[in-house]
Image 1 (tube, helix red, strand yellow):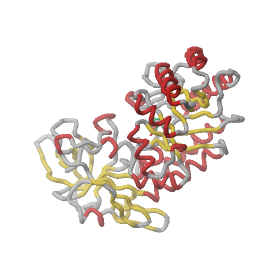
Image 2 (image 1 turned 60 degrees about the horizontal axis):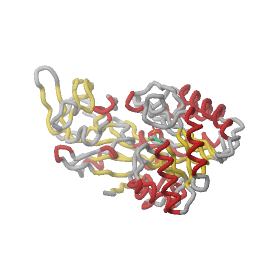
Image 3 (image 1 turned 90 degrees about the vertical axis):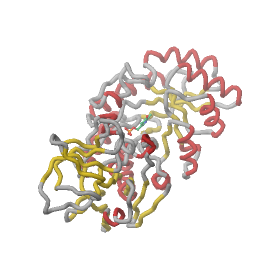
Length: 411
Ligand SMILES: *Cc1c(COP(=O)(O)O)cnc(C)c1O
């Protein structure tokens, strides 16, 4: 399913349809991302159905920073998703693509006066607050506007999941969230601004690309315990628990069905840990919904041998996909059409950028490549295009979406 290799060719296969990626490549010169919208649809349905078993009163807020392509946003909205945003730019983009203000949770440690003001005016669903000064700022702006701010307090449950250090967020030394021990200080702010702040939710988000589900279990357990205490506190008006996002995928295999067992495990532990939870259960998945269903396509400009290594130099690189250089992430790289008669050659697959870190994959054993062959960097649907730049003044890549065997281009 999704991106697969059939008869040595890369295809997008969903339900009974199969679409050959080479059909798009043959009309292209420049690099592009390709997304499989049907794959995202079935992934969302699988995830939401699984978590519904934990709570009927469930809100799935897609973390759109993972991939904010307009057609993906529209599709997820049509499937019943809400959205988690981290900037006013994302608020605007979400609303241009059919989400309502009441769908929006606003997260992030650095919300500006302008962002808070606009969100309060729009009447978004919830602002997840990450610090005391932010809470005070929101209270003051609410007072000026004469509104009540719907607040979720993001706590840092102090768990340290095994993932890349740049993407853990729920350890006590990270910049994210408030300590449980800060609850008393939150009370002090709220008692000054009772008519402005509605403390309706608690939230956590412990990091990204987490496959060690025990960390989620620990974090939810700690948080629910505190929830039970704060529920009794008259200054709070708790209605919901937001368990964040962060579930990973198996980048080491292209078989997307391996993600499903991880989702099953996650849903089962959420169910176990939230048993008898009386409020609304909120989650904020990003990567797990979209990572599998995007590939970055690049064309070989040169094959170079420098006596030590073979390089496949592509027309795409770290400017279009940062994950390998930013997080030492590994993505599978496959030819769009494999040269089955070729010999096996070990390549470093690199880009055109003037940085030695511009490596998409090192020491990859591939059938011998030649100029103008297309390669696909797989599992690039999350934190790919959204982080792209035109560093070195290269052009941005294109983005195509395949849906029901039709190809769409937006941007
Ligand atoms: C990034 C982020 C998410 C999504 O994380 P994934 O690892 O993509 O699931 C969810 N919530 C918040 C607050 C985030 O910052």
